[in-house]
Amino acid sequence: MTEHPSMTLTGTTLDAPDARELAAFYVRLLGWKVEEDESDWVKLSAPDGGRGLAFQTETAYTRPTWPAVADAQQMMMHLEIKVDDLEAAVAYARAAGAVLADFQPQDDVRVCFDPAGHPFCLYL
Image (cartoon, rainbow, N blue to C red; front, side, top):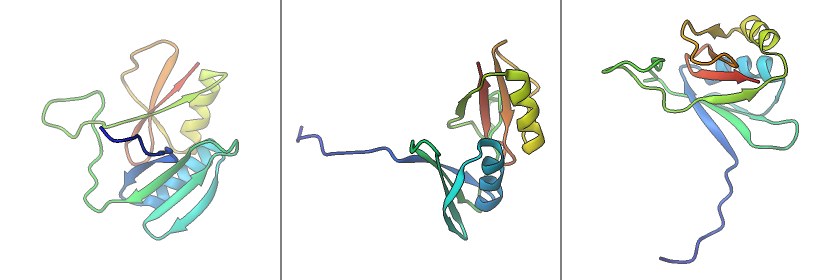
């Protein structure tokens, strides 16, 4: 094996039917700022200088099914968002445009869906 090259993970990109629409949801939810804005790609920057979050328009996008069901589009990843007050965070997320999942697997976690159907977890 050759010498390991330098690599830095700078962010995560979520596909969506409309990158700008999904980015606007996460701006409302997280309070992050838009760093780059192109017609089919938007990047948000974390206020603490951490990893960014980007959104890419994908015309063939299919919403994931959660919990997983055979022969349906599977969730490939999800975001984990730590909160201080779970009930208040869920209310805030819903006001921003999230939908609370019917199935909740844990008492200290709430699974929500963003407007494109990506699950994300709010947890204590």
